[in-house]
Structure formats: structure tokens, C-alpha cells
Length: 204
Image (cartoon, rainbow, N blue to C red; front, side, top):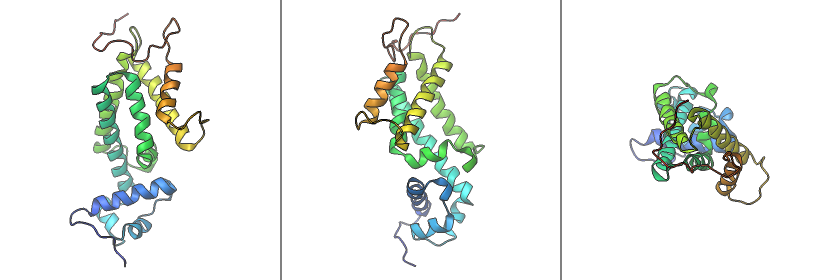
């Protein structure tokens, strides 16, 4: 067999990268461990040895995806701190990591009860929900986070599928314009991210 060269101890990464390529090209539903082994240039038993089965491999993909997403959202939150920029980081992640994105939100493909998946998913959620309080004074942070997540996820999904009309070729600029149009203050002015960081949400 014409094996793809790899460094000792790096076989798991080689298989995972090959899986990401397969998923990006043909979708997760078509993923086959035997075909994946051929693509990676390894023995047919190697994927099962490292991941157990197909669900185990896709669980690893989902875990890595949520970890990368959490990193991106945390970086955006640490930077500007605005909910808008965290949402745009979500869209950018979906564009940069299409295979991860395709698997993460299809829990029937993997083992969502995995402790690793749950840990990284919670970390991503904390970054997203934690930034929602920057939207505007008096807003319900949980509902705001759900609204923003729905907007970012829906936009990313529609953009990736080619379903959105392309006013221009910059998805982040388009996503920003869509978000600013969707989240407006009571007086009609855009308020996404306008509330200063550190302001406490009032009760009542």
C-alpha cells in the first residue's frame, strides 16, 4: 500500500485530518473508516485502534470543534468584549472550520454525552452567554444570547450552503450588517455592543 508518511506518534492526528477533509468534501454521513484509512494511507485497522468506531471518530471531531469554537469566542470576548464581535467570531469559525461545524450540531452522529464534548461545549456557551450582557441595559441576557446564537448560526449555515443572496463576497461584513439591522434599540438606533462592559444588569 502507498502509505502517506507521518511522524511517529502522530497517527491519530493524521487520521483526524483525513476525516476532516472527507467531511468537508462529502459530508459526515458518507464517512467510512475503511475509505478513510485508504485516504490517510494507513492500515485499515488504524482508525478503529485510535477512535474505536465511526461514532468515536466523530466524537473526537465534535470535541475538537467545540474547543476551537470556545477559543475563538473567548478571544473575541477578551478583545472588544461585545456580543456583536463574539457573534461574528462564531460566523468566522463556521467558515474556517466547515467539517467541524457540520458535525458539532448533529449529535446523532457522535456521542454527545462524552465528557470531553460536554466540557468544551460548556466553555463555548459560557463565552457566548457571558458576552450577551453587553447588548443593552435591561435586556434579558439569556434571551439575548439565544437570539444572537440563532442569528449567527442561521447566517453561517445559510452562507455555507449558498442560500443567501450575495451582496458582496465578505461574509463577516454581511453578517455584521445583518446583526446591526436585527438588534436595534428602542429608539431605532443600533445598540449591538453599545452598552459599556462592566455595567450590571438591573433586576426587575
